[in-house]
Image 1 (cartoon, one colour):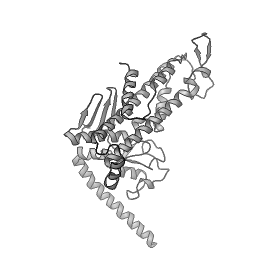
Image 2 (image 1 turned 180 degrees about the vertical axis):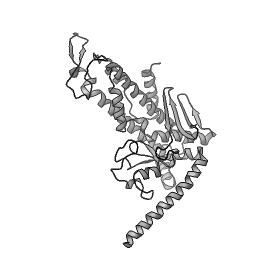
Image 3 (image 1 turned 90 degrees about the vertical axis):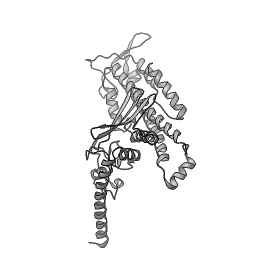
Image 4 (image 1 turned 135 degrees about the horizontal axis):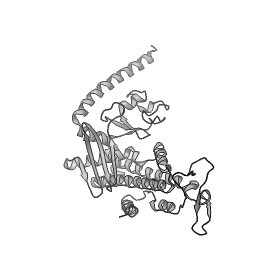
Length: 342
């Protein structure tokens, strides 16, 4: 079955289960590229979208066969293709993050908050429905990511360009890549945790997906395969301490670190927290600023790692306790000295 037909069948099923969600209109972009008859050669000098040069390239019209400037009639090169694709990617990412946040909030709620969730959530006392919704959201993210990848690959093939790959890189820098979303990691961990509670295994397979926690030596990673085509391998090693994540948090840029490691990178203590980080503090990996505010605490991932690596987790817990007590003591001693004017 061709991807286009399979994609729309999958989207139709997901829209029945997740009403109101946006999706990448694969047929629309495929039609645009089909009617883009740009003459371009690998060794020729051509002008592509977002190119500031004054060069243009010709196209052949289907009617009179007269060559026209691509700038005036090609829907790809008149700067409508990429902005339209970016808008749809943004809408898909917003739908996914909102749905995942609401689902996981319902799952981890405690105390009075859990009572409020029970009154307002559609998943109240419906663990099976919650389980299936998490699975649908992972499929929704993966199938849209695959559609975007195929669209950009087709664009580059038609135009003999690297614009598609460059656009993908820019989208990742703008946090518009859905596979970068920390909520995807949380949903995969939630899926595995749910299965572990029911039958004690660490992987679950269905018609179109497989979720598992894989150990390469002592280093774990999350793996997810959707539609036999999209395979996600998420490394669970902190790039600062080079150990398995402990109390992981995701920054605005999408990079994940241990909470204590993120505090060290932002030059704040665990007592002050990341909200007190200097706005000019940069992510240790991508060097972006203003990424330490409103971080996402990955609770489901913490639960999964604590149960899958109990010895490591207990050892790291004791180490973190000692370090946090030391920082807390220094913090209050500093506050006391400031209060007394010393």
